[in-house]
Length: 432
Image (cartoon, rainbow, N blue to C red):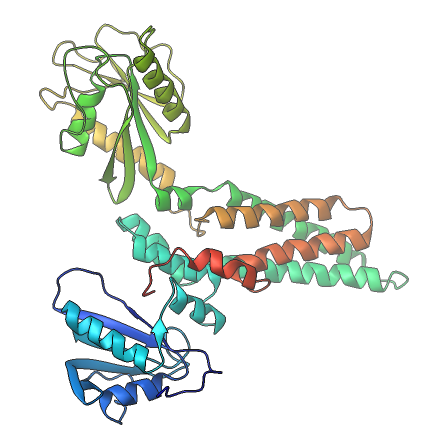
């Protein structure tokens, strides 16, 4: 029998721990009818809130498992709803049996991100914090973990809410100028309004130019470029720690880009070995060179390798020149030099790369934007603020200020949230 009315939002459940053999599996559930479902499983009584309790889980007179149970009544729960957790033995048969029992009792499997979606709808999280939870679950490096945790704690939300509040005050002043055009309002009102608009524009524009957050979340691309047979594949193998690329004495061995993931000082890098740059009539090699040039244009960092018999006078200013094969001929002064044969210079190259990457991702104080959605919203806010600053009619200025404020509000979900929910939460894992 269904323990709660079909008019209530359904209880949802999902396995919150990963698949594979383990000692414990955590099944979580949330929804207004959670108390009835848990009472049925535990034989009529609920455990004390937020205290682990060992219970025998029963369904249709049969013991399914002896589990640690947590009763989590709302609103002080992750979703803001009543919920519970079942710490089960992780055998597939146990998990399947409990899932079938939950379904029999009227609950249903959760959709991707549905727990966090409900938390947003109940006001426990805003959209920026919800996205940070997804980033925290997906974090692979220390820098990604720290950034996601900072955003989950509300750092970015506080920044955007602060800007929105300041825009609200500017708009209030603007509305006063519109509503009382014949009153002798102090001239400071107009001056203060314009000064605050200018200050906000500068702050938000600077934030828009800051790409540290996106770099840390997505990882930096480091492209190894140079002429044929200069040691690009050897360097890729040396830095990554395994033979990812084929190395021979024959020029033009690498025909396509080879990418490996590498973590350097807590930052995720994607190392890409490219085809050697030279004139060729070989159709396959020519395609490899075209792809190499494409990756060079997209790179965050370029390691341009230079052989012992090559000049280094045609490099772009942002390229890092590295003399290879210094076991044959030494590197000139003020240039990095390496030998993948002896290992000489590799530690110095790693240290130099660490400095370059740290400079690109260093914490500058204010929390950075981390997603394309954030960048689009901030760009929209700046655009409307620009239009407001250039508006000659007070009413037009007021409307542009209102639109700028709404653009910031959509980032946190303070306004127009429903159209964003499905797109954002579809990327979550099922149990989150």
